[in-house]
Length: 387
Image (cartoon, rainbow, N blue to C red):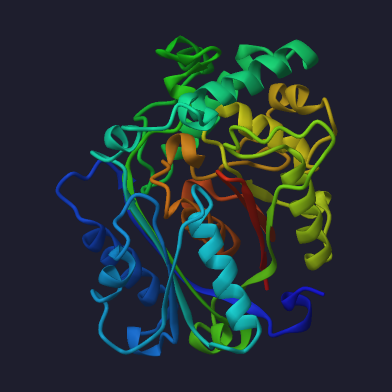
């Protein structure tokens, strides 16, 4: 039985972000301080109230997590540092939720940060050509996903472009997004942008950038005490899984692993929450490339197998549609610095469930999924619910 089914009810007490973008003059400590203090203010707490910290980064030096936490004070609290590729922030939240549900801690700070600018160019130096995942970049793998689906299902480039344009337009409504177009983006523009790996263009791909995001986690009863007039956002499901062996399993190049990871992890979350796909009101996914979001429509059960393209054409996943996806712009527009990405999803979904998302607000939102994949490969998912 899951700790969430057997332990204390857990809530997101507060959330905060430093806008994702290109910030050459801002350090990880600078961005983390902005995000962390914003989350504490949002929760109505001070750093002295925090019992433990879970800190995630991918590109920062090994001691960066502890050094960044010193920006908030020296209180002796335990600091755990995690790295789970793109799912790092989500994995930090998974650990924090479990610790609060078990009663080990009452208040946990979950912080993710990263600076990709100036680092990515160096990260591919001296790679071992014997490793396929070092020789073929993620864009190439996802291009293979796309061309395979085009062959098997008749997917068109226009479908990928419509996903990208949707996310760019959602990003335009999000003050924390890296990409903020000043006018609506038509899907034709996404198709016409510079090619990265056919059929994916730059506008169908996430950018590099810098940023930080933070969530404060605690018991539901504490959330009610701290902000009695505000809806409580409960964590009703939390799951982390790695790959399972299947016949014909491909071991090389585990950028995000097989699709079954999302199917299996979502099944665990639905069971924990006592919900099904039809109960979900909005979804954030790992849309590093537009083809990923398309695949996750089906893998999460939000639509049936082979139905994604028709749903895209109908606008099912747009704001105002049946189940909006990537309401904050997703990785494609909000950005994907790495460590903080999963926590940016929590920031967005928390605001949505409170009814505080402004022009991108999903009407009557009650249940939201936050889904992240990590190279290696892992899948981390949470379901948040308006209490």
